[in-house]
Length: 188
Image 1 (spheres, rainbow, N blue to C red):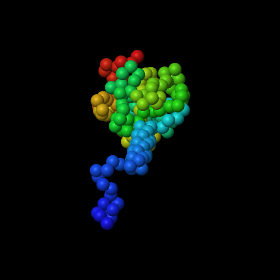
Image 2: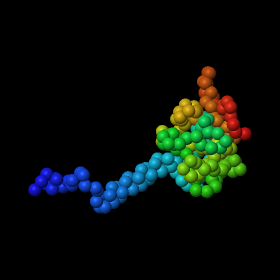
Image 3: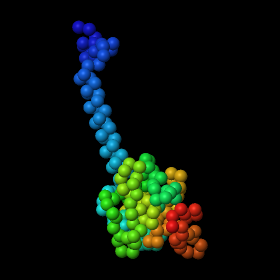
Image 4: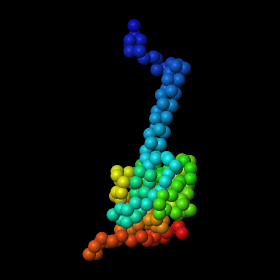
């Protein structure tokens, strides 16, 4: 008995059999499916639902929130109602996804809610043409840990009922919050 027979290996100069090729193809397909499933689970962190956007009082004042009560943010790098946050950005800033037309909770203007198609073909909720995102490190409703953060080439701000960036003012003898459009605001 030679070494190849004892170890179960075949002659490396012999072309692979159909069984070898099929086994590799099945393994590759299984790994690809797992990768797609994992990416979808991460990117859809804020959920694909018939989304309702509501208002909630936070330390920043009243801001837009997702169905689970998580603060919603706008990204200053987005342009013309289209998301500039994909890949690893979308893992940290999961887009608010919807299956159809989003609905407005109390204090939210239904006419300003819409959707935009993401690069992967899913629908992301927009408010006054701002694509909306949650922040992965905001674990409970009402948290605003992403406010004013610089990441992925732009700044992130909570969104007010008027569709503007909420900017926490520098505390001068007290805590105040202002709602202003960010510089160079391309949206109405």
